[in-house]
Image 1: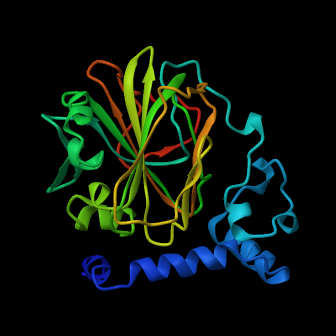
Image 2: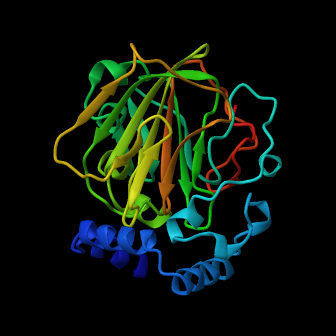
Length: 278
């Protein structure tokens, strides 16, 4: 009952205003106040600062800079695998894309075409392929890395809602990941095309990529697209490709036959960047 109420309440909350306020607070450089907030966050969520390149809380002038802190390379060794896990977090769902439909939660599905912003030709490349939905909670490392060597073809910013993307909301809001604001990154690799969709959420003040910088904000009503055929962007497996400010979700789409998922994977299981995805 409480979970259902919390989900329904989101339909009425001023999610965009809450997100703008959260982004302003997270970017503020307020000296000891900022450091007190970071210390409280570290204690509340058990953040392992020993993994950070700079473990000193006082070295981060804003919460955002703490939140997107770099980790020591040895903290996330890369597995000898065809596909690497691109983030720290938890597995929301993964499996086959059945005739263009992606499983979200019991009773909820959405289409790959809706997820990528309505492009039927792009979605058709993944019609009978595979997907993985990976949830990053506030406590997780929030840089996103490449699952394999690839070059960027397109980036699409799709405007949308800013519902929370936590597991309760995924169970309660139909088509959540194709409904929220998102940044769709289309790659080509020697294993075929794949897509990484960076899904925005309540209080996610910004989504950025390494080749573009901050994609959102600004938040606009129209779909924006960038093409990279004439200005190649090539990224190595394990390299950073983007980051979230506060928790969110990455949905990855694979072409048919491109991946056999790690047999140890299960919905709800914890994952770490650099581990074997498939």
